[in-house]
Length: 189
Image 1: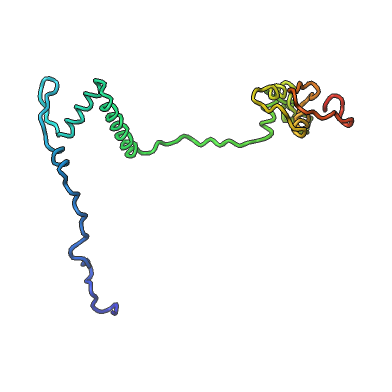
Image 2: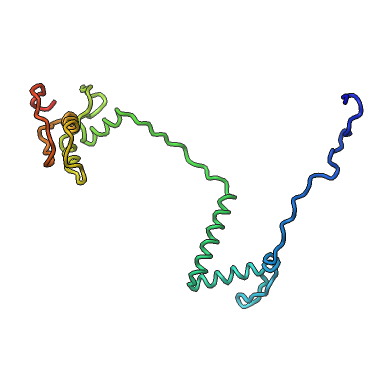
């Protein structure tokens, strides 16, 4: 077909004269018919018209208040479903500003120094080597219950190397310690 000539569809006219097909209606069941009927219920000295569904919910609520376990269970389930439906309708709550925590080894060492766990006191410290744990902090960790009784020689060496005065440590029974080497200073570093 040429663009200039007659086409199948005229300008401004839809190609589907019947329009979009509609969704089939939801089939009506006997339950829907019964639940939509109205009944007169005595309430607060007068009468009130309710649907059968509302009347059943009211009666279940009343029996739940009287302690009927099945009614209580049903009411709690209905309340939960109601809350979930409301939560879907509610806009999401605006959260506060994001707090980003960045790990900084210098800050951690400084904090341990302030708390008296390590020998590092401040960033301006003249000691540029790694911080060492105070003897009492290491001893507290060694004395903790539930710790393995037998330490490996390598881990014992690492613990002693990371402690300010390792010669003052009291090791649990059964820990295999290495003999101090002659190259280490007597005060433990």
